[in-house]
Figure 1 (cartoon, rainbow, N blue to C red):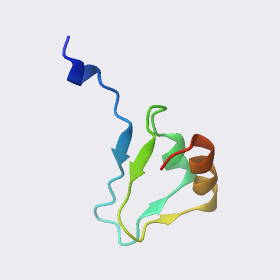
Figure 2 (figure 1 turned 135 degrees about the horizontal axis):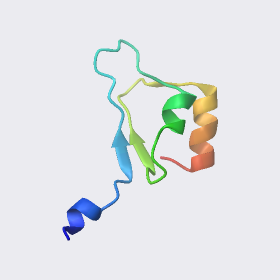
Figure 3 (figure 1 turned 90 degrees about the horizontal axis):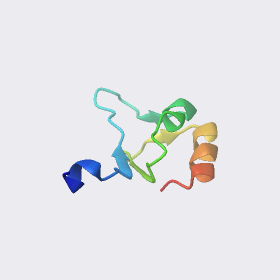
Figure 4 (figure 1 turned 60 degrees about the horizontal axis):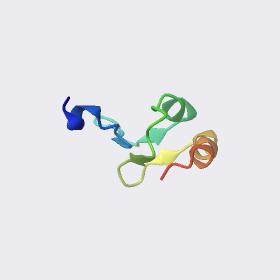
Amino acid sequence: MNSAKNKIESKIKLDFNGFKTPLVTEEKIINLSENVKEIIVPAKTIFTPSAMDLIKKKILK
């Protein structure tokens, strides 16, 4: 088996192309895989308070 295929991705980049102001909501955080430990977002991204609470609970960077 190819070990690269079996490697579980722990980082994810959220794509906000086409959005004037990127917004991370609770739903986006809930829909992340359990394996994700870090999310990468553009500068000036806005996080809703409920999304921030979930990020803290999931211990995401």
